Length: 81
Image (cartoon, rainbow, N blue to C red):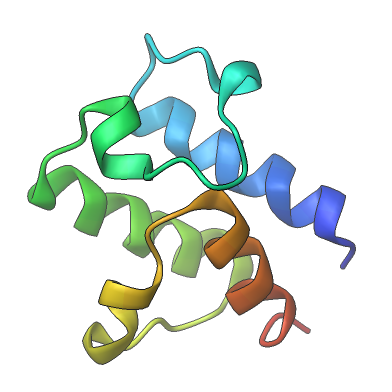
């Protein structure tokens, strides 16, 4: 899977969590939770959605290192099959 496909999947899942967000204006290093005003419960739902879409289990210990779009793409690219 390419990084573009992973980004597309991230936006698809984010669109379910924050439907009013303008995802095309999201910069790679923006903090997702702060920029999109996502609370911790919704962020957890977002990570679960990524697991369902991509088949990549994200351990809770890794949540803190996944704050930006760039972080997520890098993390998922290394793990998706």
